[in-house]
Image (cartoon, rainbow, N blue to C red; front, side, top):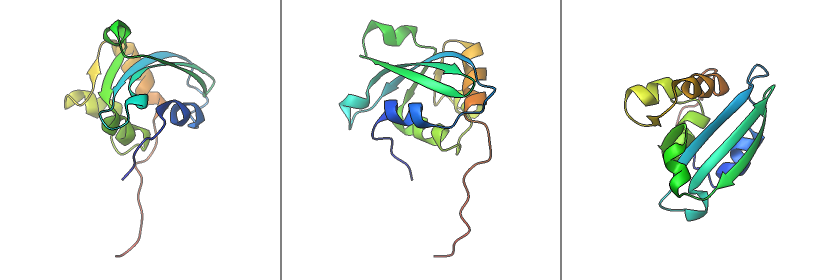
Length: 117
């Protein structure tokens, strides 16, 4: 289980593929940690991201992607692919090009642990 406690820091420190270049905005709702709630504007340049955290207001309706922090954590960990999350209605996609970028940002294998409890 993963819980993003600081979405801005998590999105800035993630190691995105070097081919990722572009802009995307993600509106995140978080009922437990209000400081996480807001719109995250990411500017990616060759896999490096700079992130601006904007308050949740009218800008949220203009965000490319809208989701809950729990879904963002699943995408962040690569447990759920962004395209799959969109298919099942877990994220709201306002810009199809941004969904393609989000998919590229979090490409890779799902996490796996080979441990017996």
